[in-house]
Image: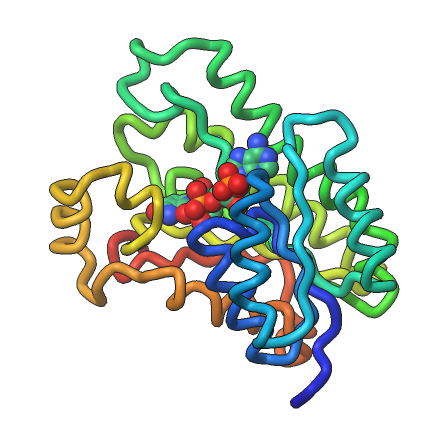
Length: 246
Ligand SMILES: NC(=O)c1ccc[n+]([C@@H]2O[C@H](COP(=O)([O-])OP(=O)(O)OC[C@H]3O[C@@H](n4cnc5c(N)ncnc54)[C@H](OP(=O)(O)O)[C@@H]3O)[C@@H](O)[C@H]2O)c1
């Protein structure tokens, strides 16, 4: 099997992150799987250990220096970092819903935590992913691209991440770094899908001509973008939504 290098999956204990980690191991990547809950990380690492080389890392992104400490720990453990995929989901209560019912501090906090985390992760990882021509991928949600009611706050914050990645991509290309955004909409079988409830998921599924994607439909795109086959592609924002939005 081809050696692919070291992939850090932030939020790797989540629905999409764990699917990416599993597929990455199958493809020959060494995987640093990050999550917030130590028990979850430990259980996933134990389950995936037979698939290849991986280790678990726990960090709460709300803590100061979390990105720097995480990246330093992964680099120390594996000796290099070739790709970073951020699959963390931090949405607090009140980030979606009718605008008059939302509160300014909810937005401020979400913006700081979600966009700020990607920025700090990129900053900490830069010296490593620039060494071999690596990749940074940030997950957002379709609210950042396609306007819809009840999505004002999350849409604005996600658009912030998209703006960061696109501008970062143009500049960091000079150091051999590629950067992309992957944007899901409704992801079948994910924890968020469960939280939304079966009625809303069924309505979304009825509108998605190709069928709603599951985490296993999103992982191949993320890994392709980190592969040598995508070495001349950067700054792209790709929505995986089964035909809901285009
Ligand atoms: N699933 C969907 O339907 C959907 C739709 C649109 C966009 N997206 C986006 O796709 C990405 C991945 O989604 P997902 O469904 O895989 O999310 P998920 O299953 O909820 O996983 C979230 C991940 O983020 C970690 N996390 C949460 N709070 C954290 C904190 N304070 N510090 C460190 N880590 C923290 C979680 O760790 P713990 O498990 O330990 O808490 C977990 O690893 C996110 O950006 C999400 O917004 C998902």
